[in-house]
Image 1: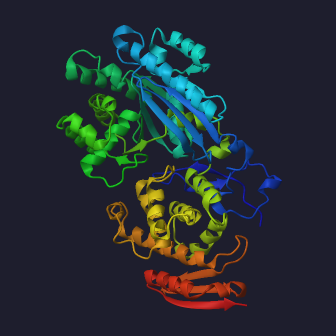
Image 2: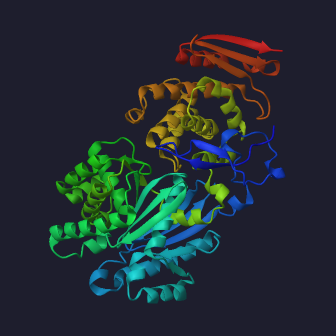
Image 3: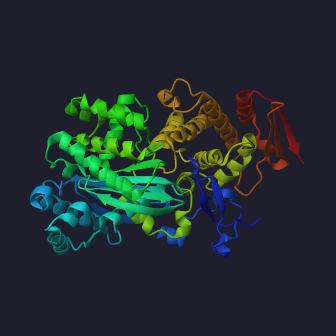
Length: 540
């Protein structure tokens, strides 16, 4: 059988951003595609030259509040952060009064960029891509600053307008959620941008002066500030129209508010990307911030002093934003303008791929003892999940690809390492509950019981029936790994009859010697989790 063509996303609804995949008619039918069938996820693309060209990309983001260098590395569709450094320069502080960049911030920004250029040289990076946003584009001395940076460091800064900033931020969201739909809101120090996304495309977009550094200079105290925010938000609503889908929040101030929301709720997971909030939680967190000592709160939530100083302004903006646009839910995105710049350089067929599956392919290729066996294992365990929906199937695929990447860890800690990796690693395309599902499956890959671990508070993010499914998957992988053969060889077949609670194992003659005492014990443990009777057959 030859490989199916690469896949593209046609449509998405609710949380099923990756569900509806169809062959891409534009995909070339080349000799490189003449490989075994990879199923609905397509052959991994990270070894393709057009993908590997993006394997090490450096981006400098000169914002109103911070200057940051990010170097992306690895599987380009779901990039790892090879290097990430941020300097809080506050270039936009006082801009509303003086019309110029903050002099102290300007010196700090220049020094930071000088350092970034040296780092890039040491990493043998291609030329850095640098963009500047609201503070530099609005300041009268913005052009002079860019000329000074070019003269002192050799780095050309591209000053982008507000609509372009909104577009790039929205593309950053699409990097993590291909096919998503909703409203992207990116808040910086001096501006706030909105962009709509649907069917993998960026639609209408608009910019506004609702950055916390500018709001701090509004006259009339908090009452005057809230009146100003309401007025601007009404204008934004008129420009953007009805936007009641998901609201994606991009920017450091939003992430700080999310940390505070987590602390208020006692939320057990600290990963910010894809953290979900509601309009009610925004209201409650606003009250929580107003009633808290900000110094104590920032210390408890791990927020810097510079960032916490902007939170009271940002929370007023967020409260008015959700009141105006009434989103159905709210998602925090750690991906923004920098990721959008990387997305800009991707060929379309790479953009259309599932970031979770591509990152798992890459991890398997880099770290597994037998790269390629994950696909074989996936085919082996899938009969146990015949009624699984596409969103569930992709999680099973991800777990199978990751099942052996932690083998170097000490045997006593492999289960913990696997769970940690799934629930904390930088992987796009995973809700928090889905992280726990994959984590539990990998934990059960190395451990029969999930009780008695330090991860138990996280289990509450996953409903009990889904915890049981993760257990079955993990034990199936644990057993399947005992039948370790070359990826192209047939390792056997499982058949599951749920109404009869009957589990059948069919092994080819050449695989029969692998069904030893330990393998048999693991197969019986799987059967116990399914509450099943078993039959084992040797096929001659």
